[in-house]
Amino acid sequence: MNTEKVRHSVAVDGLRQILGAAQVSTDDATRTLFATDVFRTLETPVAVIHPDTQEHLAAAIACATRHGLAVVPRGGGMSYTGGYLSERAGSVVVDTRRLNRIVEINREDLYVTVECGVTWAQLDEALKDTGLRPPFWGTGSGLFATVGGSLSQNAMNYGSARHGTSADSVLSLTVALADGTLLRTGSAATVQNGSPFFRAYGPDVTGLFLGDTGALGIKTQATLRLLPRPPASGFASFEFADQSGYVAALTALARESVASQIFGFDPRFLRQRIKRQGIVRDLQLLKGVAMSGRSLLAGLRDAARVAMAGRRFLADAAYTVHVTVEGRDEDELRSALKAVRRATLAVPGMREIEPSVPRLSHGTPFPQPNLLVNDDTEVWVPVHALVPPSRLDSMLTKINAYFDSVKAVIEEHDIDWGCVCSVCGPHAMLVEPSFYYRDALNPLHRHVLGDTLLKGIQGLPPNPDTKAAVARIRQDLADLFLREGTAHLQIGKFYHYRESRQPELLRLLEAIKASVDPQGLINPGSLGLR
Image 1 (tube, rainbow, N blue to C red):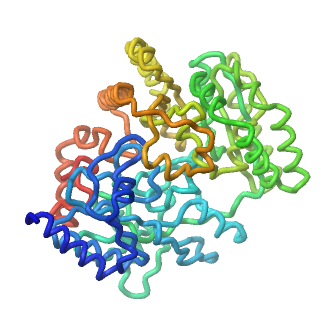
Image 2 (image 1 turned 60 degrees about the vertical axis):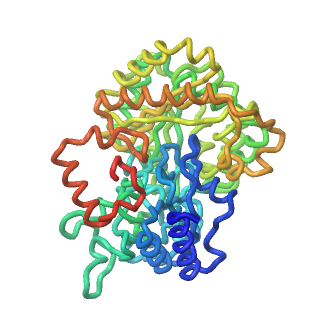
């Protein structure tokens, strides 16, 4: 046995002593699964650990780094930018999902503290009877996506049109550093009688560990702000004949700042969304619509409206925008919907349509992840960029021009694509081209979807040429985004973060990295840091 294997073996033995044998996985199937994200497989870790307390996690990190092993955190696993994949052969992946306790719900001071392996679906359920909710309250993948993973990725979705990303809802963090230190941030770090009620006590140290994709430390607990859960919800959808009207509506709605969610589909994406839903899925969503109504009767009426409209009315639609508004009462709801309609009325060619899409999304916010693959075994992977509202039209035009330039490649490999836009507060617009292509299911697909969702889906053999073509297109778009000065959320090991930073900022970031991780063993390669 060579020296490196001996070192790895000694490290794994030390991890078993700290965590117990059952919480250290070294079998091939688990290690392969944790080396795979939605799109790629990188280096197989030496072991996967499943700590159940933050103290155990901190001790395990110290053990691994003491033996020279890189440590890579992983939440629910729904990433597509390599954020939790290791680029080094000698690594340990931390499965944070057993850190899944709701630590404190403070109704008086309006915050909730959770362990970072808690999923958004779990948190929503825990808060349901309190009448409270975080401003940002989850992602569409919230059955799997964890709070810690979302904060590392700076995720956006539910609540983002009004309240920004997941990072904007955070008051305090506890972070395990490379040497096993547990660091608290914000007012929670006060030595005498500290409490996590205020984030910016002095420099915003909390913010250093948000959106870092685990490059600076591993989040173990997070405290999130709470707001009264709006009892009333309303929906509106609009169709536009062309990109110009579509963009004008999205940006006008963003400026109103009255909606919780605003998202739009181009015609290609809309066709794919319809294609990816089946009757069983529709019935599940309709049940969610009925249960989410202000009363059972109102919910049944909403479900009936969606069922009568069906999905076919969208089949010939061009560009569509979908809006969810929430209010404390019917008056506030009517006022918000009035502002939404006022913002879109000025757009030429606008047509209001049945709001089935936002109603379904709101009724079942955490669905099964059937977006990953459809009945034809087309698998999905996106790429994205954030731009200011003034650049949205230009960005979409350049994306479309790029796709026109690679039309032959797309046709050769039968790659389908479409683009979704989402509003992140009044200052930022998310543009997300998504790709659908025929390829073999990877271990993550099979693990997340399971036998029930995969029933009837015929697996395909690997399609390396098509996958390589998709990889080139995604990389070309990342290069385009770099030239255009866009921002990104889920940075991971894919986007050009390092290349985009001014030298002065990069030196500061590298100094911080060296301070909290002097050996460069916490998720090396994330953010372009080593």
